[in-house]
Image (cartoon, rainbow, N blue to C red):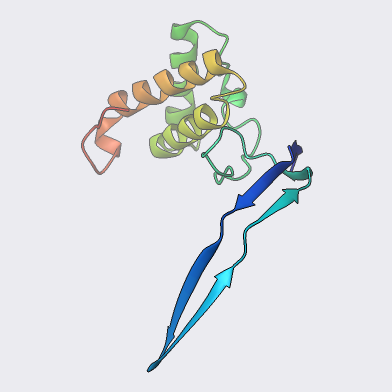
Length: 140
C-alpha cells in the first residue's frame, strides 16, 4: 500500500473541567490548557478523502480479453466480444456484469473515460440478459 506524508499540525486545548460518575461517587478533575505539536508522518493513501480502502480484491487478468473485449474498441465490437463471452465461453452474464462493474469502480479515478465505458457495457449486459438476473433492473 502506498503512503503519503501527512502534514504536521498544532493542537490547542482549552482548560476544561471533566466530571466522571462512578457508582455513587463523582470525581472532578481539571484538564489544563496546552498546545501540542503533531509531527508529519506517513499514513496509508486510501484514495479520495472519506472513501476508505479498496475492498473489491484482486481480479484474474484476461477473463474478457480472451474473447476480444477491450474498452478502446468500437461499441459493436465490444458487444460482440461480451456476447461471445456469455454464449460461447464459460462465463455467466452475472459474472461478466460484476467484473465490468468492479473494473469500472477500480478505474474510476485513474481512467475515468474507460471507467464510464465499463459501466455502460455493464448496463448493456444487464439489459440484454435480464432473464439471467433474479431482481428487476435498477438504474446505475
